[in-house]
Image (tube, rainbow over all chains, first blue to last red; front, side, top):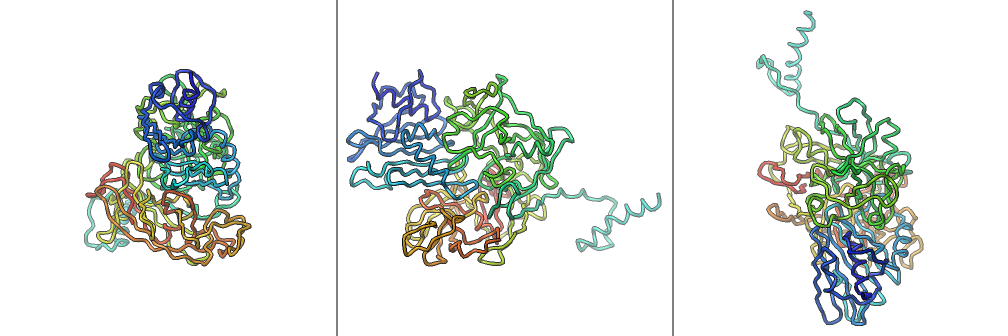
Length: 156
Length: 423
């Protein structure tokens, strides 16, 4: 078994999917390179990889409408993740070690009551989560790890 | 006896006089009284336990144990055109001596729901209730009971990892949420039959930690917009709030929600001048901010207290208590909203419908510095926020002075088919 396998299973958990076995929690954002194909069967989702000049995009789609994309740099680090679908994915799994930064920033927000969007921006982490029932979307990225020449707008 | 007969004879004539009819046209039959389809909406400081609220529209909802006279009138339920279904805080129901039994799945497990909002979620069981809004009754409506007392199963990590659980009145700034947007069910087909249920509905075997598993729920078991379950007047709503008296805020606002579209004399659609914006499968049309070429998913959302959109204009600063010059410090209350450096900032955006109802309409609006607002007011028209958002939310400021029409998915309103928003 490779660390790649552990990682994809962690993504599967983030997605609400059932892996073949319980894997230890493993960071998605900031994590290592992932093998694309080998574990797709276990994910109950369809995996698709798109190599680009600066980075690769690995996409998982599920028949429940959830879509997850992770952006993998040439140095093999996941520097961004995006999501869309009828629910919000498990952000602890998705954000990995950055999750505590996210929760601390969310709880420090002054704007009370229900919201349709939140944006957390620290020097190390940006999380944008928004939407409403039936249509949630968001992204998280590590500004310091974005490959040079990559536009934030491309992280969709 | 004689007096009673006299009243019966006179009553229709009094009605005729009221609507300008002639005394010479009395008939032997009295038409049935129309269902009262208008419910008061108020914008105020919210329930006492909320500790203050702004730009939150509230209604009073009558909720009963199904088939019984065990009922409560729950005030300060937030009227939300951006969600679907009724959610009520458990402790508020308990204080009114109403207990709603959770529904169960085929395995006898309690059905609980994780209803996400940005940065948080509500959690609690699905239960059936008879819901009365004005004179309209919906029986056995699946509603969500928000478990602020932690009486039931605790939320699983796949739910709570979105952010904090918002089950308290002080979190919601309301005693509940009445979602009357463009859909009947809050999840729809995505929760009916996928091989991997999304993290929305869960079956819970008891209340111990770790006993909840995401599961599919048929449409009839999902938390449902009560309007869609009315016997009539069930194809949509009109939210009608007046314009504000002051650009710096009004103390309170009184308006109404009217049930049904084109079903009674009080809810006809205007013959001309109406902008009808069809919504997609997620409930969104599109909006494009002036100066941008990006069409963003958009909705008209009484559950948002501001006009929320990202704006790269340097003048559109985000309020900070300790900002760099030339921006002025903001009070903590407004932290996160827009504080234009030169205010007010005039803006416009183009709304475009999706599908058959593909109207295009340009909306002019302004964003003020909220630090100039009246401190004791609760209703503000020029309040903006949402920097960094990838959506466009026409929140409460858009409702002041507009009649907002919401057409429910698949329902017909004359020749128009929902889902749509119109104004």
